[in-house]
Amino acid sequence: KQEVTQIPAALSVPEGENLVLNCSFTDSAIYNLQWFRQDPGKGLTSLLLIQSSQREQTSGRLNASLDKSSGRSTLYIAASQPGDSATYLCAVTGNTPLVFGKGTRLSVIA
Amino acid sequence: GAGVSQTPSNKVTEKGKYVELRCDPISGHTALYWYRQSLGQGPEFLIYFQGTGAADDSGLPNDRFFAVRPEGSVSTLKIQRTERGDSAVYLCASSSSGRADTQYFGPGTRLTVL
Image 1 (cartoon, chains in turn red, cyan):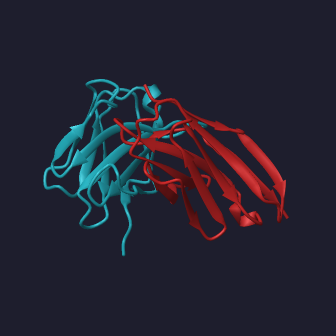
Image 2 (cartoon, chains in turn brown, orange):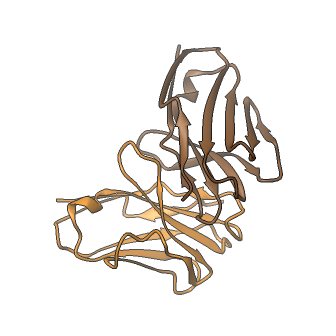
């Protein structure tokens, strides 16, 4: 059974810092990995999708990498802003459509 | 264009009652998914539709939960004899063709069972 773990569970950084969020998964037989953002009381917003054949994807200040063989992904956020404060969720699609981690709660302090 | 919409946004019911939650996917999306999210947890998969049929219902917790998508667009999640443990946010998502595509989520329905 696929399990997804995200470290750290919570992170607080000053504005302007670069930061890395980590995600690991136990079964490397995946179609893709997605990173989502969730604001309090809201649904999920897709940030990046990496297909299993890809190594990384970039969108603006976000860069996500995937190492399928080791079961790891990282989300890099450059020059963090207070508006980046949210919970970031990692999810993998394999035999089950999207298995999620519990998320990393990010606070960017102005 | 319009995103995924879900109604109602909030639903409060009493233990033992029946509830229906509705999802309108993005127009033209053939795949539709239901998830359940408890406080402090990531969403948990319930069921996946491809067109009108349930391609994977392995996440439904028991036979009190049922979902339909009769015309391949709108879907309804039905919960019979609700229990307090059913309280959660129920999220719906859609994707253009299948599980390899980006999933777009609705705002969710917060269900509270008293």
